[in-house]
Image (cartoon, rainbow, N blue to C red):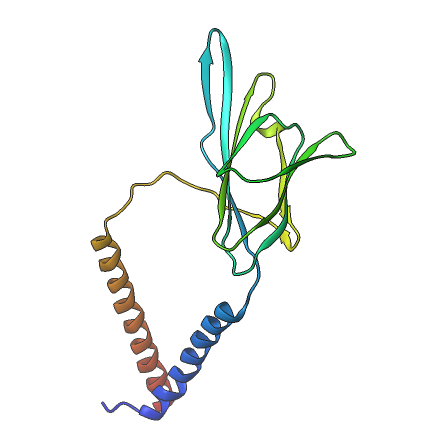
Length: 180
């Protein structure tokens, strides 16, 4: 069975063009992208009193500075920001408060650690995270074991071989259907 190279080229060129277009779009597009992770929520008992804690990690994963970052709260407990960053507390008309950060440069991340006690609960604290260009993306996390680099490379190679096989089978199917 002979391969019709014109058909192969007609199928592969749009796929390659779409791939390079997507890559070029990501490289050229310069906008901030603010990601937020809610980390461990924990409790500690000290002399018959429970203290609760949790952490928010904010990271600007975009290619432009994220300005006007606002972390809104229904109730604002004791907190600290690491690394040490300049911020303001803004009182909201409805009784809530916001932590206001002027900006996060591309790649910068901060941790906001909270400490509070009963009757305040985690779900009574936060009211969203936004910035001048939109709303922060809240990324759910899951504790998973870290795999070795060798396993990652092997999995990548197997996925590449599978993708190439799918393309080859697709070309065979199209050429077979064109011959019928």
